[in-house]
Image 1 (cartoon, one colour):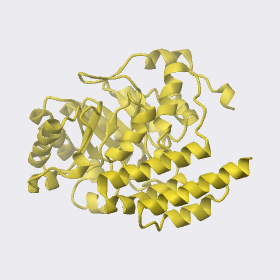
Image 2: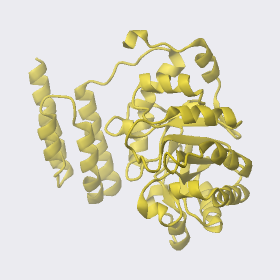
Image 3: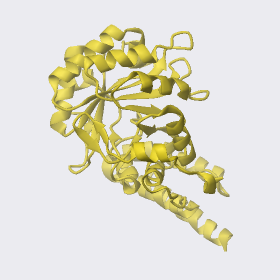
Image 4: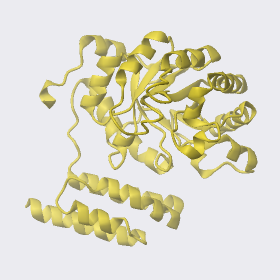
Length: 342
């Protein structure tokens, strides 16, 4: 029951201070995960409406792409006052990663996050993402190269292991800390799991005990209840929200508010959710033009659930060709909901 959700005194005391990532103080223990094709500048703006103090991450950026392009890719763009913010990089070459990290800091990144957890084949085949779990020597060289290249904290996001037979999260985390990483975010699934099955939070608890740097828990943080349960079970220094924010950019703020105050924010109404969808659609179009419309289709689908007519609306929004068409569909849906409520 919601009314029975309480923070233990121990947890409340532990989370009262800012999250220290090296010299960077973050006034929230709830972070927005980097999500490929999702956490662009527009999405981060929406999340920040409700969680202004939380650390945000860009989409994963290829160090090779930065090396070969004369201009920085659009996914590295950020608002001038968008703080705290981290640019997440991936590659398997220390020199490329160090070069990319310097450019990211020039862009305004408060920390540099190295992706060592992406399970996608096109990334792992090239020696990046979660394939580094099988090559801790190279992973340590990458961290050391970035630490030497920049004067901001370097962090790592990874998984508990390659599969259930190769869970090496403790030793791997220790290697990353020894190489200079100043925070570790641990997704409680193996590479083989992908995003299926429950996150194995027990491994996050063991890694937290083994490291002296902050450890952030990731995986199945889809509600305030889940966040509190995870923090109690793991002793982690914070939580990172990922897929739970798809179509629900309110989540980071809801969790942060509860951890700060012990009180629950009322969940958004369906009308408020659809209004947010309208804002998201318009903002994507303003930022990316027609490409933003195509990208908006998946976001619109994520917003459409749990209310009368959601399935039909989702099907129609997935095929929109213009921002006006999307606005009309959402406006009609909101009018129908108001009529249904009354």
